[in-house]
Length: 433
Image (cartoon, rainbow, N blue to C red; front, side):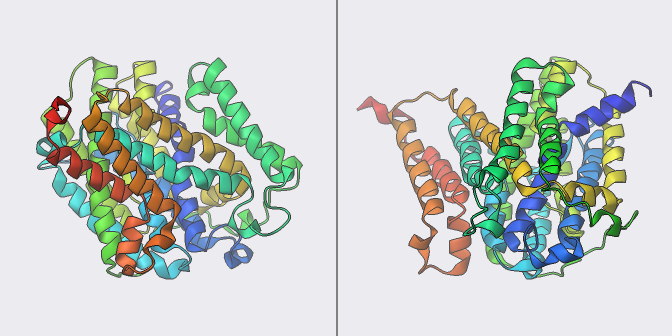
């Protein structure tokens, strides 16, 4: 236990910032995050979402490490809130406040159930998602989110139009985070390198504190212990969100297959078995559905964990189980969420710039395996142009129904759909002419 406890917490720290960031982004997009009128109350709804991010990342991780029946890979897989869904969720809740959360959480639950059912067929649909498609999708996720990092680093939505927006006082702590993170990634080894973003944010937080940008006043308001509430924001069917969640479930399932294979290769030197891949997909979907019931966001396997296992060689699922228990304890204590919430938005922006940039870089890395013939270049060009173009100019679709606008202006869904369809219908011998 003397070795297992710190090693388990190490797995959690490697993904901690990335796990709670989506909740902060969605709360901000909906209008009850930083800069909203909930500030006077201590941002209770955003704090609750941060709690749920930790709690259900821990519970979903237990599904993977311990498992029950066909659910769970019984491998050291760490689950966490997924970045991939953010481009779809932002336009769905933008400016709606807590009123938009009922439709979002209903979509998360239904998407999770759909994700669960994919476990029965996951092996049969992998052919439709070669590196060309998966690489483009991951690249689009990164490109869709990079704007959020710059927005946060400059001061966030509340400061837009004010002299403080983009001021050096905003950018300086963000740049400190980026510089410290890069320095640790390049020159440090072991856990310091793996948790570079977390350490960078801690250093940026200290800098921001000395500049008077940290407000600790609301921590005392947070309860010591709180049980999550089912359907906290209600239940509402929103076809756009449900379609988006189900489509992204396919992407998330494929990501989990890749992470499961990466863990068995890096930690045990073997391929993942069919039962492990199926069980991992079941756990993914179940974890997402249950998280949605209690106001949490979609869960998926965390790729950071794959690199950590390859680096340490520690393949014990029980070590990760200890990390999961640590997350669950944190998720039941609003005080932890309240402390996380005190991180200034510009400091978080520095970390987000690095994280989302790494997502885009991972997509480029996946695309390096593609044979860049004329056929594949055409697929990539059309999918990227349409998806990125619609995201940059959402007003071009103002005459379409609201559902279509939400789905298409995410940028990610049209890119993914086009690349999958074109890859299936365009002949392989297109270059023969």
